[in-house]
Length: 214
Image (cartoon, rainbow, N blue to C red; front, top):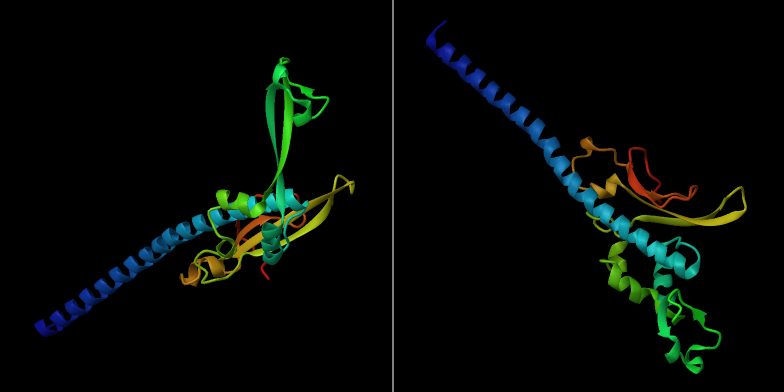
């Protein structure tokens, strides 16, 4: 074999080796970068779900049920309030029946009376201090370019039909959470689910099965 052919073959082998090395690098880099981006996005989704759950708890406390849509949740936050109780211990010698009422309740410390004050606080005021999102942002799935979490609620029977229990469900599929990432690495219809319309749970977790989304 002459030297020219040998050089050509060596060059071809070198090109093939570089190509294979590059493909190996890309094959490793792609999944690693995807996993890093996925973790960041899932963390943000979990923060939102935790906040949504706390808002739903507040709505239930105010109305007796969970909001079944973002519009009804916004209305409850704007219009409803929760009742907060505050206890005050007053020494017997300073107790004023005209101010605090007759027949006071004796405290554990028998030298004092226990008085309970009830006050109403608007939901929007309470939530503005405890929820780190505005409502219009709370409903949006992170990294989705504006898609809403799916939200629904219902009343189910429990205790053999003796009890009526409010339930709610919130979901976010991967097609929105992981929007813009390589689709070969994930199931677009799997995703996060919180609560249930059939069980009395308010926990959230990642589901490998398709999640409801309308």
